[in-house]
Image (cartoon, rainbow, N blue to C red):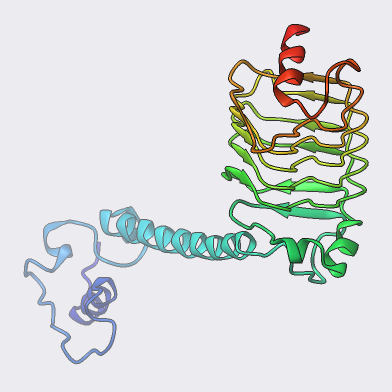
Length: 264
């Protein structure tokens, strides 16, 4: 193998040295035969095809890959946070038609929920998209989504917020996750097409006030043994006349739950 000139070795060394990225003023000459001259002891010279087989090349290649990967991850992370931080009240042109994105911590206040623009937009919603790793469905998240027919609430969600699905008059099929522990006030109020609710597999501890109020088609419900609390003033099943016999008052939540457990 032919020996490299001092100038060639110096240039190659400069490229590999991260401290010499600005100027070439401090360039040191590599003397043939010195400890920096790789050709003098039979080791592969720096640069050329032989350089690809050295540890220096491997380290340099790994560094480049890591930098590219980190840049890509940073870009994806930025895009992800833009989605997560998106408000459900922002009616943008790029909003997927007929879909609503649900993420934790984005409660809608009552004034926004009842606004004319919001209610008109919610009429278009036929599908609910839940982002990953959320634990709560926010208040009024799907309020008055009158054309929503089915919802599959994913595992990991523990709380369904206040009035989150209230007024979904065509909602017939709801799948609840095992992780669920609380159903908020008015969560499913006025879901007049809802016929069956299965909670037996869940860890529900609490049904808050009027959670299933005026679900007039509700005829079957399975409740878990974990259920212990009912909201203030209760009325969880008020006007769910198909759920219990006529002699049980639907406003008496404890009596309704006792009856449901007796027939499970």
